[in-house]
Image (cartoon, rainbow, N blue to C red; front, side, top):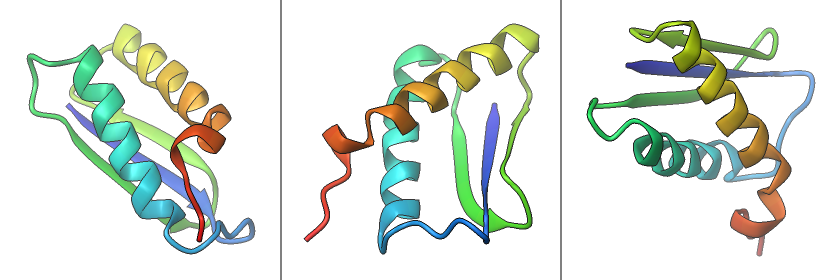
Length: 81
């Protein structure tokens, strides 16, 4: 399964946030889908978007929930210096 998350360029994140978000998503998605080799990509683009390739509707719903939880808990895993 491949997961692509794009963040709108108009809403820049703090330095290091894209890499940190990618690593946290990899960790959480691998817990939920251990049987597949997951590939997660997070990058800036023209608009916010989530794409889940190689998974059905239920997989996309689960990944959407994981992304929402991850975003809402950023204070727990994203540490700025």
